[in-house]
Amino acid sequence: MFVLGKVLEKFKRILKTATPRAFKTIWWIFKITATVSFAIFVLKYTGILTWISTWVSPVFSLFGLPGDAAMAYVSGYFINVYSCVAVISTLDLGVREITILGTMSLAAHAMVVESAVQQKTGTPIWYSFVLRSLGSVLLGLGLNWILPGRPEVVQASSLSLAEVPFFQLQGAFGPLFLDWLIGLIKLGLWMTCLIWALNILQRSLYEFGVMKAISRFFRPLLWLFGLPEKCSFLWIMANIIGLSYGSAAIFDELSRGNLNRRETHLLNTHIGICHSNLEDLLLFAACGGMWWVMLVARWAIVTILVWLLRAYYFLISSNSISKTKVE
Image 1 (cartoon, one colour):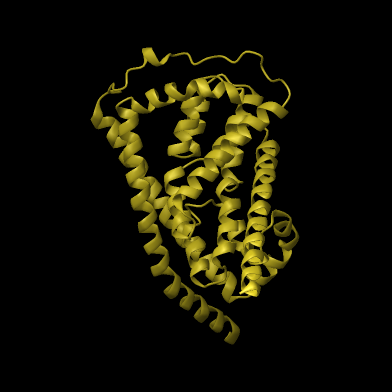
Image 2 (cartoon, rainbow, N blue to C red):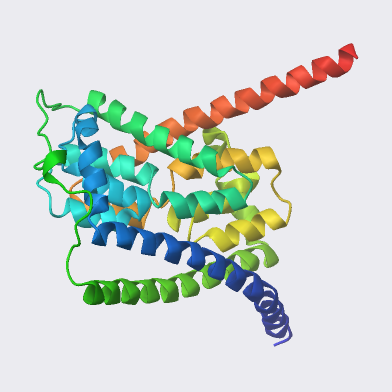
């Protein structure tokens, strides 16, 4: 009973400490999500998003994808993976095409919200945009070159830019706005419960000494990826939950001072392109994509990028030491 009482007392302390921080982060994330979501709703309602997708569709032949796949990618890029999957379900794509498109979207989705999360942890927003966009393009080009069955002629978009007006209302505003609002409220409730629970879990793992065991277990894999051992929990969190839902735990971890600026930058480079490897990956697999290709391809490119960044840090550190010795 005495031990149980101590455990309960410690858990109460965790709740008291973690809850205000979690809800502060939840409100911050929700404001950004609601703003971006409404902006995309307006773009979709006015037909501008369709025009943007049609405008970029010719580029998708470079990835071995039909022009119509541009709408799926653009939706995922600005909104989330669910939006991309919803569009994919309306297209006639094969396993190869879904694998390429899924990999690209997993590397670069919910760009505005997730880049804002990474900026708050110390990584500039421009870096996240450039890194993830470039990584997505390189993955598309690489998989189109590597995967068998590359088409000699890629189907163009079913619509030409001349046929798509820049501005065209997509129906009655009221019902569409109501659907958007209900979806946003549901998302807000889910986000609140999940982020709060994850923050409590993170604090509990520290308080009860589980975090050290987790770090030791994943040490070899993180070394391969070029990441420090103390990134273990945040790496797990990003891979299972993602950046948005795991944001409170990430902010709390960094507030403890466990990672310095360079270590944070290395972590953000990795998880920027390679996160949400449970639910989001399975969504694309359910659509017909090859899950192991979508996972391994992103692991490969982020491993190269992180080790290149480590080499850069090593070089500038060596130059600084050399200058100090000369002086």
